[in-house]
Image 1: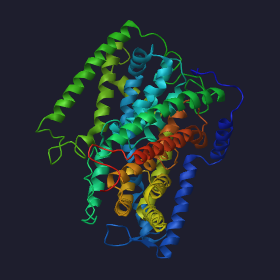
Image 2: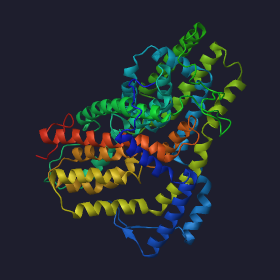
Image 3: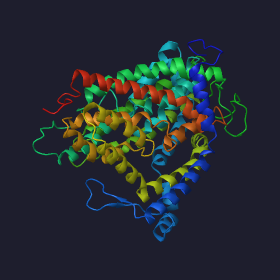
Image 4: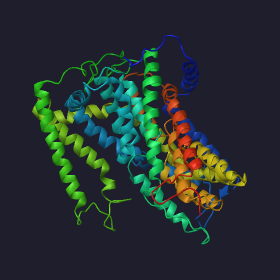
Length: 534
């Protein structure tokens, strides 16, 4: 039950979101949707290729030519890479290993017991803000946060008698709509700074731009994160959860074995939400102590391995950022923590008695993701075609050229740039890739109008984050859809987008507001970076 008592009468916001939901649910099933988008893109690329479409990409010697699907080159590409497009689909690299490990932790009862012990007596009003602060800082875990945080947030909400779907969807929104910022420097900061620095080499010597480092956006990132945490907590508590209650969304999982099961049938394996609010038993507490001691030991070993000067996890320069074997091992480390602590807990609690039990829990976790795997096959082919054909880069560069031709200046061009990035983010979901495209155009362009490259980078973060939670092209939205369907088997993308849309609108608005405050007061955006060039 929500912390607030929702009115039975539909509100104006409810009516608006209901219309969006109905419109979105008219879309076909995601599998059919992405298959259709693949065919549409195949035809479009063929037409553009026949017309000789190409674009000059800043920083590249040769123009980018759009490649047509219905050609000898295109058909050869597709028939020889069909399997690789799917197996090499980046989200699968993150999702599947983590799901196997989380299956152990969930099936053994570790997650349920730990959540009940940690949050069972926590104030109900505090939970939305706790989920928000973890989610907003989720990029410290890279893309894995999209897979780990939402289901754990659902368990946290259920532990105190609140709606688990509010925790799940709110956790996903907190991660995705703020993904380019955090309260601490993260790998994303290092990636963005590296791209910006490389582009700054093309600036005229007369422009004395400050160097861009990992902390060049730290002050504005910190301010944005704090504001977004408050906004997210309020949205979960005052908008999302009351709306779920009014709609009668089930609080318990449907069985995972029968697609047509009635919500509330909790015969599926894993921690169910009917007893998650019960007290932690003595045997569970003992098992948690063993699991906790194991976790501390694992953390100690990982830290020691990372800080050693001869650590194999360090890069060629001896560091850990921006890229290194350590940063590439995040998925492994998460799998290690969930699987080992889950096995230790299960062995002490009696829920794991043999290797067969471990395999069963891993299989149960994987079975919960079969719907995502089916949709991912079509989505992977579509995104691979989008990248191979070059149509995404073609559209982005033309959009940037159009904005440049508008000859705006100062704050208007910054706001137009943010809006352009928000729209482009619906089609290019990789922030690093999109910043690589945008930076080569807008860093020099805005520097010539007196704006520091670091501020352009800060503005990019807004558009890069706020809209990615509502685009069907985001593979992690499809992952979330699979999680939600464990509670609502027939839910569609329209319903999910309608529940996430308030987060996109509010996050975009308040984040732009923070940007305007820094601009208006001419505040430093980082320890050695301002807004305007001297």
